[in-house]
Image (cartoon, rainbow, N blue to C red; front, side, top):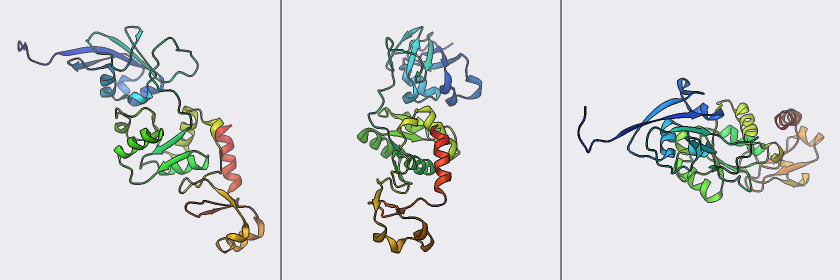
Length: 254
C-alpha cells in the first residue's frame, strides 16, 4: 500500500459509447459499458479523447444521467454515456456539444484522401487539398475558413481548436464518398460538374473556337459545349464517360 500523500490519485469511472462512436473503440469495448481509470481530476473531454474518441464527433454527454459540457471535472465513480449527432430526436433541453452546422459546407482534406477530394469537387463541394498539408496547417485552415476537416488521422481531430471534423472510416474512395454523403446528409447540397476536379476552381463555359487547339479531333466532331477552369486552364466536355459518372452520382444522391 502506498502511503505517500503526494502520490497521484487514481480514479475509475464507467463509460458507454453509442452508435458510430464505437468505430473509434477496440472491439472489446464496443457497444458495452466498461471501466476507465484516470489520474487526478481531468475533464470528461480529456478522458473521452484518451479513450480514443475525438470531441468533434460528440453531440451529447450524460454523467450520472445529467447532460454536461466538455469541461466537466471527473471525480471518479461516474457513469458516463457519450452520444454522436442526433438526427431523429430533439435534444434541445440538453447541453448539445456539437457546434451548429456551417452556413456553407466546405472541406479541407488531409494528404491521405486525395481521391476523395477530387470526387467531392466533382459533386460540387468546395474542397481544399494538397499532398503536403501538415496537421497544424489543416487545423489553421479549418478554423480560419470554417471548413470541415476530413481525415484518416484521429490525432488531428483531437486538436482543441477543431470544431468541425470527420474521421473517414473506409479506405476505399468510392465508399468514402458514400459514407460522407450519408453521414453528413449532403444529398441535397450536391451540384455536380461545377468545379474543376484538379484544382477546385469554378468552371466557366467557353467558346469552342477559343480552345479548339486543345481538343482532340474526334471530340470536336460530336461535342459543341466546353467548360474551362479559370485557374488551371483545364478544359472539360461531356465525353463517353459522362453517362457513367452521372449514373454513379444519381445512385449516390438518390
